[in-house]
Amino acid sequence: MVRLVLGSRNKKKLAEMLDLLGDLGLDLTDLTPYPHAPEVEETADTFVGNATLKATQLAPALGTWVLGEDSGLCVPALGGAPGVYSARYAGTHGDDAANNARLLREMAALTGDGRAAFYVSTAVLADPTGKVEASVEGRCHGVIADGPRGAGGFGYDPLFLVPEYGKTFGELPPEVKRAMSHRAEAFRQLRPVLAKLVSEPR
Image 1 (cartoon, helix red, strand yellow):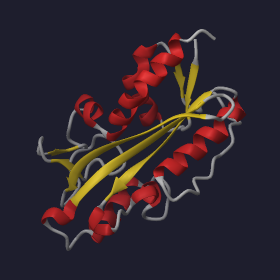
Image 2 (cartoon, rainbow, N blue to C red):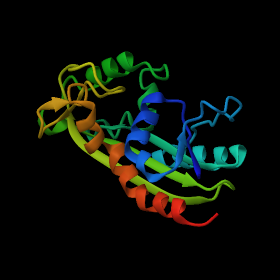
Image 3 (cartoon, helix red, strand yellow):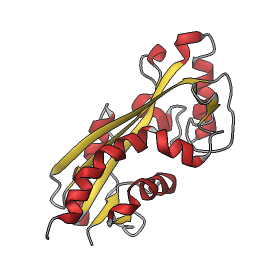
């Protein structure tokens, strides 16, 4: 069975990957079984740049296929911020509450179309030598609510309002979010590539 490693230790990202790709017959895991995996510095200024760094550095180090993924929230009225700095927008990596609070402050004077936003997920697949075999991007459009709503999801999900549902990602059931999310769209595009990988003789 072909092993595919998600270049992350984010359990929520892994859960989404297992949900979206688990039926393909791959041995899917994150970096947890690899405690000595190198720490990849996300120094690029684009999502695809950071995803490529993760995939191409981790794959040869682990000797296996790696899926590098980078994602974040973009607000056009803020010049695309938080963008690639989404996880550390308020200064500390992964402090969701502080990141959400800063975003609300930055957007306090914005109304209507000025509150439009979109999530981006870029995924890059590298073979065990580090060669890039596929690069995809998924987006999901919404607006930023006036305050957090719902306790589900992670990151900016309690603020990300999906107009057609009238609910935030923090309020929507996980299965609904997973079906329409930016990561779901990116992984959908990867499925044919991964299915071919499974079917090819090794």
